[in-house]
Amino acid sequence: MQHSILHKIVLAPSTPANRLSARLFLQASALSVPLLALTLLVHFQVSAQVSDSATRAVPVHGAVNFRDLGGYTAADGKHVKWNVLYRSADLSTLTDKDLALMDSLHIRYDVDLRGTAESAKAPDRMNPQTDYILCPAGSDSLQDWYKHMAGLTSGDSLMIAFYANTTYLTDRYKPLFAKILALPQGDALVFHCTAGKDRTGIAAALILYALGVNYDTIVADYTATNVYRQKLNDRLIPVMTQQMHVNEQVARDMMSAKKIYLDATFSAIRAQYGSVDAYLHDQIGLDSAALASLRARYLE
Image (cartoon, rainbow, N blue to C red; front, side, top):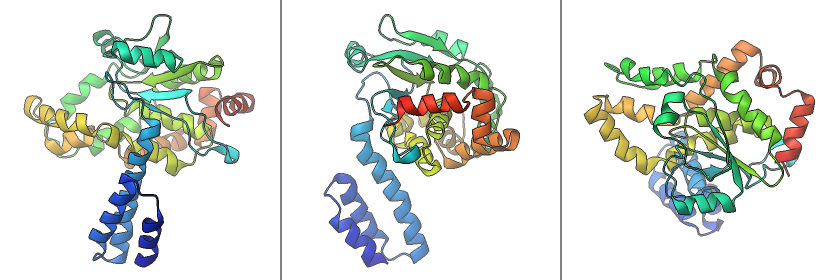
């Protein structure tokens, strides 16, 4: 088994990600087979995210976690179109060069998933004539989260509680889907929150699910945030622990995109609505005609 895996690594293209995978295999070769398999799986996923970032990441200077949702295998063997749907973190500090890039990418629509107070403190900096909507449902109470962090040694329970709360999902995401369905040919749309992780991560997951992308790929896109935000998180976590007196592990959990968090959203939707398909149909408005239109627009 190990020889077979190493053989595939050696025959793979000589990219930094593949060379990393080979080194990790050799370092892990003394482990038991189950642990080795798990180790390789984790590192191959990280390596894939690193390899993918050269194509997917949008090279802006004033934002992080800005990336294209295109390229994923979707329904009927088709792929999500590139250069049409983008996800990002806060857009309040885009530079002039970034705005020129936005214009060249035809990003003319901006869906802001932050709360009213969040968006007022850091308004999006986009090109004139950009179609902008704010979808603040459920976000204005997020500032109260910090009151619940005292004494915690893990942030998982708090994060799972947020992800499992379906109260505001429809009000937050139905306007986003409406904009996506009505997006003019040749234009592109970006949706974002502050970190581009939680509210944006759920949005991306629902969009990709509606397009027929399998759940493993949806999770990979969601957890890729850990790669795209790594440098910023390394700076923010000490600030959270020192200035906000948050336990370090809690801070790390709060800044992470873990599969168990996204799982909580999908499980809660299934528990309340019967299935994710039923939720998209009954709550978001993706009946058979709208779903067919969505896939016709965004798959190729």
